[in-house]
Length: 418
Ligand code: ADP
Ligand code: ASP
Ligand code: MG
Image 1 (cartoon, rainbow, N blue to C red):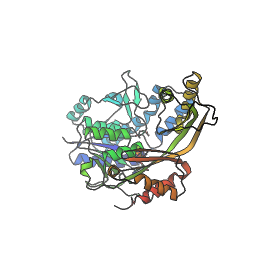
Image 2: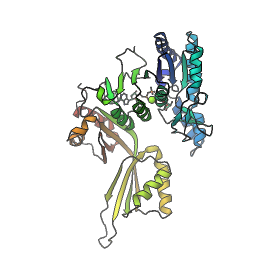
Image 3: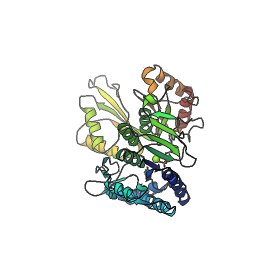
Image 4: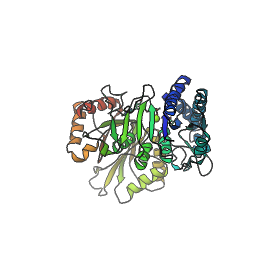
């Protein structure tokens, strides 16, 4: 039997009526002759609520218990979806991660897949089951504890199942009808893309476009999964949505294909750090040990305020997720107290956002950065930190200008035009 993976995100299973709506889409594929693996998220808002409960109960929580709690939302929707399908006369059952078993690493809260043995689910398909409803986002550690894959992780569950079971396609059903040039909630001019290259999608996702979890795109690229983003709320045909595919499948590409943003950024600067070999290793080593995800890094020579002081100093600036600021401060203060490095003061700015432009066309075009900076300058948006890679340019700016910046860049690169 040909097999499809269909993943329904939180808004697509937000209540019983929506679960029924999703089940009908599954039914249509079953009637077309497919066996289906359905991956479900928790009902929309549920995971946030569960995370909140954990944080209210324990500030520096045990990550194993965090996973035990936050993985539970998916169990509810998996069971309800299986029941709904049964009510429609479709042989279906639910699977929690440990029942498959979905084997992951033991990195609680951010676990990675190790293996997905097919035997149990294959046996059920052979018995005549048409649908396996799998709880997304969760897995099983080697120690036998429940793990989760990081926020948005059900996308990754879907792609991993598509790879493991050799699915014909992996359809991600969500509340938008595809991948847009930027978040349609931010820019009314955002345009849906029919196709997007894996590499561009990977950058957009990692720079904040949460329509797909970054890791899901990585897996799809590695295992050549045909990955499509489609709407739960519209009729889906063969040409619907956005196909995430190899670059070669895309006829023409623009210099910039999309604009991404990340709202929850913070910036920290260590002023007047002693400038000697090993100091960056000591600072970022301490942050890494504390599990801080540092993103952009800039190092600048500090002005010597005392000309008689011949020792050179440097200012070290980096960005990180807002919710890791306390942890980062603690790690830096402890490492400094232990004599690993010294600095004059630590400045934190939690009101920043990152805005990025992404496009494979950038590889062969000059002047993209200049065009980006000019567009921001025209709106009087001050740039605090810049980073670039082969196919993206990111800037850190004041959060209050984030939407303005996204729209200005969307206009500057004429992304509303095909
Ligand atoms: P789900 O619950 O289905 O997983 P998500 O909320 O995780 O859905 O992802 C879908 C959302 O991603 C959309 O509602 C949209 O606001 C946002 N988004 C951000 N960037 C983009 C983009 N470039 N294209 C489409 N959607 C985007
Ligand atoms: N429910 C999880 C989350 O909200 C996983 C997902 O929806 O993909 O992050
Ligand atoms: Mg999601």
